[in-house]
Image (cartoon, rainbow, N blue to C red; front, side, top):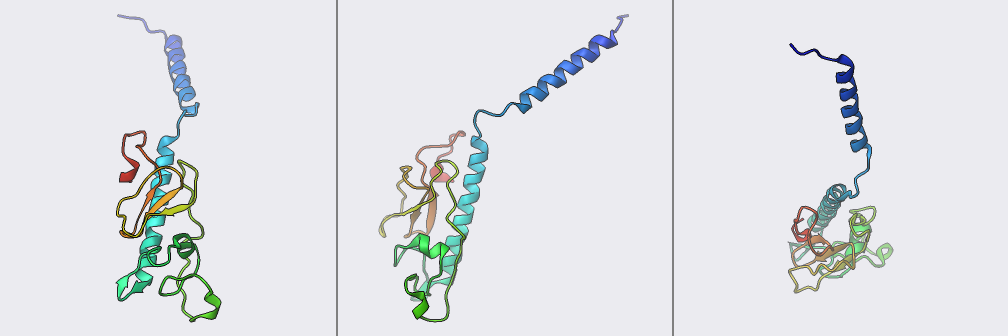
Length: 160
């Protein structure tokens, strides 16, 4: 029969617990997971604002995406707009305005940029080059993070 040493077992247990505590207390060298979650949250906020805008506005009885007629997506999402999407001279027009749909354009948590670049009216795919926070495709009403490449899990940012 083996004889146990409670003191040695206690010391080994304390060392194991201390090692785990130290390893969990050391900050991660990369908070990529948190940034990816924040990026997905920001995209959800932007996509919801675009959807709400399109439901409030219409052109010839067809939902109007922001940026299609006027090219003013940022002003249309954070400000007031008329039914036709225009955002200028609102004080001298009809009494019914729509918006704002956002308090501000969210900052892209990966590249730390806040602006939105709109693609041309005929383009249906975004060009992601990292020069802005977001890329908007008016023809489809879709908005993307302006991030070329993939995240740490090898998921293309285009797929977010």
